[in-house]
Every structure is written in C-alpha cells, then in structure tokens.
Image (cartoon, rainbow, N blue to C red; front, side, top):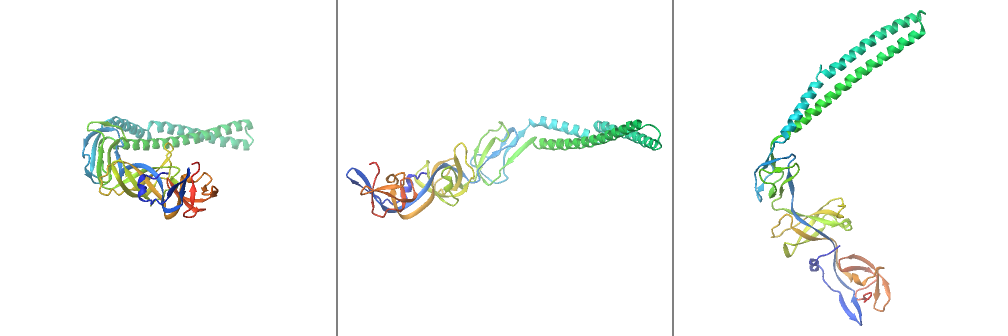
Length: 364
C-alpha cells in the first residue's frame, strides 16, 4: 500500500520529535489519519471500444476522420471482401451435392431402398417357408433338423431386413443433417462475401484510425478506437494483496504525469472479480473529474484509493513500533500496544499509550 505526496494535504502533522541524549524519541499526539491503497493506470473515455471486422478484407473507404464526433449507427468504414468468393463457390457446390444426395430417389437412397426391398422379399419367402415346414412337422412330416435349418434362415432374413431398414433411415437422416449444415455454411459464407459497411455502436468520438484505405486487414484486427466525447474514467491496476480492501463507492485521488501539481478525484465504480495471473493485479474502474483540464485516452496516472480515514486519533510513527507490536517507553521498558489503521508513515494507537507519552525509537 502506498500514499502519494498529495495526501500530505489531508494530514495534519502534530507529532513532535525530540532528541534525548543519542536516542531518538517521539511524543504521542493526535492527528487525522487516512489509509489508502496505491494503484496505477490510465485515463480512458467512457464506453471505449475497438472497432473490428469479423472478416478479412480490403479497406475500401474510410468514412470518418480522427477527432470526429459520431452517432450510433453512423457508417465508419467500408470493406471489400473479395477473397471469400472462392469459399462461397465451394460452399455452393457442397450445398448442391448435399441437396442431390438427400432428395428422394437419389443414387445413395435408391441403392439402400433396393437393399431393403431385396431383404423384404427374402424375408417374406423365408417366413412362408418356415410356416409351411412348421405345419409339416406338426403333422410329423420332415425332420427336426431341416426345421431348425429353415428357422435359422428365417431369423437371419428377418435380421437382415431390420438392418437394411435401419441403415436406410440412418442414412436418410444423416444426409438431411449434411444438407442442413451445407445450407447453413452457404448462408454464412454468403453473408461474409461482398462489401461491408461497419457502423458505430455508440455516440462518441473517433480517437484513432489504424489502417489506411487500400490496406488488407485480417478478421478481428482493430480498425478504429471510439469512446465517449467528453466523459472519461480510469482503468486502474491494484495489487492482489490490496484488492480485498477496495470497495465500490470509495473515493480515489489522482496524480497525472501530464498535469503537474494537481490532484483530481473520482469514485470506484467497478471491480473486476479476477486476478491477472501474470501481473498479480486486479482491474478496477473509477470515475474521474477532469475539472478544467483536457483529457486524452491513455494518459498515465497514479492513484490512491481511500480505504479508511479517521479524525483526531492517537498516532505513532511506524518506525517506533517493533515486529511484536511493542514500543520502548521513556524509562526503557517495553510496552505492548494495539494498533488500528495506518498509512505509509503513521499508525493509529488503539490502546496502550496516552496522548503525550514519550516513546523511544528502537535501535537508535
């Protein structure tokens, strides 16, 4: 956690450091204390987004200019997508083939239908033979072995008919699915072919135009940057060890590299619920009041998020407290204390010391 120098405007220094022999001492006094979390980040326009194309194409015409105000639905750029003509023709051929295969009477279905009919004829013939021979055996004519042979042939032909019918139905369903997929693919390729005009998604301003007319761009490559005209926010990176203390609605104070000796303010508006596993930081969005200063997207800044603040509390410099939360009293004895909030230099004393107590600095 860090507090920048501008917090000195919020702190009333009342600690009196004195010297006793060679031992540095300090007198416990009351002061206003502000606890904050340090963050760094950039200024961004509200609603900022990058304009991209879903297809690869040539930038045929750029219809706006950098700095121009735009309305939602306004044409921004025209793209020509000639390379997809070949893909469209392939998709058209696949659709025709799938349609031909799936129609009633197609070669594939006709062959399977013939197999069904042959299997049905065989089954009917074997079933008649089986019934006839079964009656003969009931009259004690013929052998049991011959009946078993005919029964087996009947069962096989019955299974073959069932398999042929099942194969016909499965193939018909598969061909219909292939037809549907081919139709959908054709429509998708058709929608991706030809001239495209990309429209603005918001009311705002064009902050950057990346490609030039005549340039070939890949799908999803940024083409423009657009955001609100005069409303800005900040995108902050907060260390993962501090993010648990940050809440929406907390005040934020900024120092911008581009604006010296000026403190701007804002409020936390959104905390992203994940940690960047590389940077070990969390992203936080906050408002910013630009006052009379012009804002530009990408401006670097440092911020302090106010986590807690108390008026007129007992404080002691952090360097006068050891790792066991003990202080050295004026008579040299150790005394355990209870502490509260802290900033970069001072810590709140909750119990163990009174105003006016003199404390020695360890190791001095």
